[in-house]
Amino acid sequence: MVSIRMRKKADKRMTMHTLVTSLIALIVLTASPIPQSRAIPEYSRELPEALKNFCQVCHVRASGGPMNSYGDDFTSNGRSVGAIGELDSDDDGFSNEDELAAGSLPGDPNSTPTSKKRGINPILLMGGASLLLIAAGLALRRISTQAS
Image (spheres, rainbow, N blue to C red):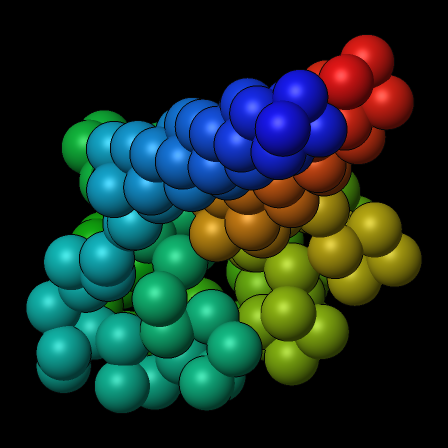
């Protein structure tokens, strides 16, 4: 009789830990905004497929806003990617054309064909946070099971 009661308490604790872990993961996934490209289609049409959804090709921030040096050159040269291909808008030693072909950002001097630095991918960050929360929930479940 005593072992049955203890088992019911352990089951309730495990269910509660699973519920809390699932709830935290759900909150993280739904509260984190997933950035969407706001690029005007006729402008992004000339970009390589890998960069079509990166606002930072032409803008300072991933969410848009002010133009970076490449965006300024793009605007002042008839809004043509081809017209500014030979320029080095961010003065990092690589032409805009070479940067676009390599998948780096031609308006960011820290993003070059050799670094391909684009910042943190929010989708990967959310996935990593979710995995950490699930692992923490499983660890709590193991600790509570051992304590029973």
